[in-house]
Length: 435
Image (tube, rainbow, N blue to C red):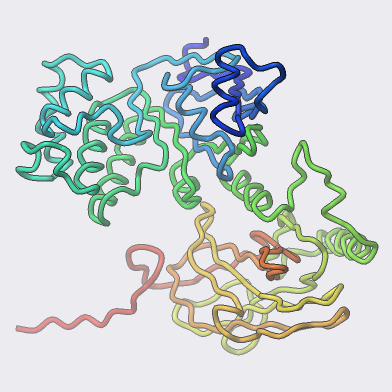
């Protein structure tokens, strides 16, 4: 393994035997079954992954994709069916918080027990004891048996032990949102400290904003298969397509995405429009590399922003009213379309957005051939800077969320400001100072 590599996973496969009933499992274990009593489930299927030292890598994917499984194999909690894992450096893992704690022992005893299980001596744990207790902040309860703790106190202590071990590699599985809001803030602050110190971090999260904010790279798993790896923005965009069934998975029949001539024709027409738009994108801030997908039932033909005077613009002055517009043509009947837009910053973090259903503005059916002009009007309160707007037309069909057409990061808007406050928004506070 190369010197700059912290974690190397080669052709990793993990399979489980699934039985219909306990008796089948017993017969199989005793060798009494005349035929196969189980079906094989591949939690991971030939996955390879490399994490370099000092890199922060996020793993995303739907439930059951194998995200937690790969972390458990890397940390040695599970053994792979086949493949190889190499790790260079001391690992601290935040997987199942509190695993290994003895509920009859008090907090202090469990700190030493858990620390020694990770591989530290009693002297090393003693040196870190004060920082662990300060981080957990559960007071005198640390001297009481853990079985008397609330669930919040328990995870605070478990997190404090794992995070204050000072590892070379930190592995986290959905563990940054434990405890109350103040403790969560402390967890994220510690996470940022680790990143600044150049620690290697590998973590799983459904919080796409955290993936976008903290990660240098993202890995996308789906049903045990590695779909891809790359920038957080690119992988998050693909993940959103996977969630709504609009990404051609390796084992799926992609023809099902376009199941009639009308939708095929609409998709072809969208391609023509996309080609023509590439020739002239600069005047209105449109993105020539817009990510576009949907089942073709609707097409967003036009989108733009206007200022308070109604003029089309690519920049908006902070504190003024502005409008977001989209023109949508329907290629088949739709029972109740939902029109939406979102603002992202250049890191890909979603800042704000809304839709016609939330605003209770349109809850009516449309017919094939109908054209709707949608306008969202609001005041610009975002801080000065560059933002990307995404557009969407979606709905529910037989209780299933369906994407008719989406345009990700389609429009660039510059917010012009002579007063930027802290964070994403200006609260427009009025300040008074008196004697």
